[in-house]
Length: 106
Length: 106
DNA sequence: TCATACATGTTGCCTGGCTACCTATAGCCA
DNA sequence: TGGCTATAGGTAGCCAGGCAACATGTATGA
Image (cartoon, rainbow over all chains, first blue to last red; front, side, top):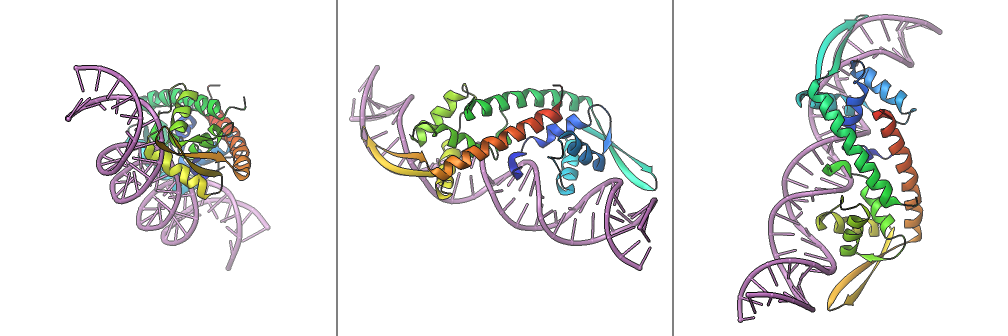
């Protein structure tokens, strides 16, 4: 999968993956990989800055914990994040219909 | 529609739109708008550099003509462009399935 | 002891879409 | 005559964001 195909869609994916239950960064990477059938294997340099961005934007809340001697920062969807996710889903629907429509070959 | 959602997908759209018949830049903008139900209204600063990029990459061939006193640069899909388009379509299929899958709420 | 998985982070590059700007012709209307 | 709009092409430079590369540290098992 091309690198910058993801541009502008990553936020939605992250928000979606923490929708059901809060996850820490490393687990989010794994969850994205699992949910995409291995297609998404995002480097930490992509995911961690994105998480900070989303928290700063008010879409995620984070809290530290320690599990098995390892520190974890767990992110959870805020209510603003929930609305943002809904909006992103709608935008994605439009976007994918537009692209599929133009690509045609239907 | 968010600006950079398009990142990495624009090339496919352009190639798709000149697949059936060659078009000049201005007409490509209109064709994209028409085919997307008005969702895509791309500025010239987006489309013209993209066309040059695609020509440089060998996916498009261009030729000048004059119609009604106005100069036109008409672009047409090369055979390499045709293969690229096919590849892009496949990538889009994968990509959209991945995103839709992760966004869930299927 | 060393490799690997787990876990978090930062710096800086690079790409590409967009804003803003420029040029020029044709046609219409006042 | 002047001005607006549609048609047609283009460029310079901004900026965001995904990523490569790097840095740090713990736990586990061979």
